[in-house]
Amino acid sequence: MVNEKLPKTTAEFETELIEIRHLFHQFPELSNEEFQTTASIRKLLLEADIEILDLPLKTGLVAQVSGNKNGPVIAIRCDIDALPIQEQTQLSYKSVNDGIMHACGHDFHTTAVLGSAFLLKQNEECLAGTVKIIFQPAEESGRGSLHILETGVLEEVEAIFGLHNSPSLPLGALGTRSGPFYAAVDRFEIEIKGAGAHAATPEKGTDPIVIAAQIVSSLQTIVSRNISAFDQALISVTQLTCGNTWNVIPETAYLQGTVRTLKAETRKLILDRIRQLSSGIATAFNASAEISFSDGPSAVYNDSKWTDFAFNVAEASGFITEEIPPELIGEDFSDYQKHIPGVFVNIGTGTPYPLHHPKFTVDDNILLKTAHYFAILAEAALHELTTG
Image (tube, rainbow, N blue to C red; front, side, top):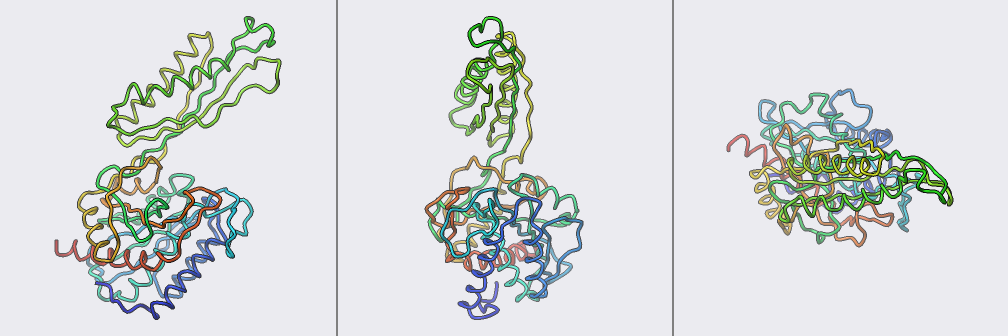
């Protein structure tokens, strides 16, 4: 297992990790624009003499720590991008980039995985194989994972592990579950084309606002009347735009929203029903509806073997473990799981504000423990693949 002796004293190493996270937090960057973040990660890895792979990536990178070069290969993945949110905290290291904030804790993920890389490097000669360490760009925009996969760098990887912080879990708790964990994410857009008219003579037009209202109400029946109560799914209409003045019936209306599902068959059913209902209602009102979908990541689906393994390592590392219900947020970690068995875990931060909130914070007290956990998990997984 990982040597309990850290590169410096435990306190010094923890202080160093906290300072690194604060730096990342202070200089957040949006998806596919993480140039300074990538440069900082690269500098820290090179200072630790950790190999960085030469890959055609605009932002983000993949490093590796190798013991037995003929042994198995596993991967740890973190995300590095921030959100277009104006920070409202009073932190001394709050974002200096206007309108951009690490409101989802990716600075925590990046630093924890960096810490695990430092620990693995210290114990490199004892590793039974190779650990590839993914610093992924563009998770928030959905599918930065594809940039990594397209390089072919993960073709030999036999297991993959990822993390997300969770404000709803107590500090020092680790939660996950076997099977579906995070939801598939889809976006829908509907443009309704009616006929404009004077507001005083609606009979001379076809009012798209009335049609849009009918569609919004009807979409809410799809889950309640088409999906089993024992399944989990939702449809949220998040934008409805039509008209620009008080006395004119507009010609068009536009609405968009999201679908979240855990099962592939439920995903297909809901998207089919959105199309059927929207087109049918528009036709009934003598209008038309143009419906389009943007496919996001599929559901995160945790391998049962590696889920049990991750729980066992967490308990041995002093975490409180908890099997938690599926969540309807999305994560493109699922793209890796289509090719590689693995597990995605939540680390409890016990902070008062939810993800994507302008006052969101992360408790630094869990940083060192998380770094240590992923180093132990990686080493143990290599040993398992070698002997199991």
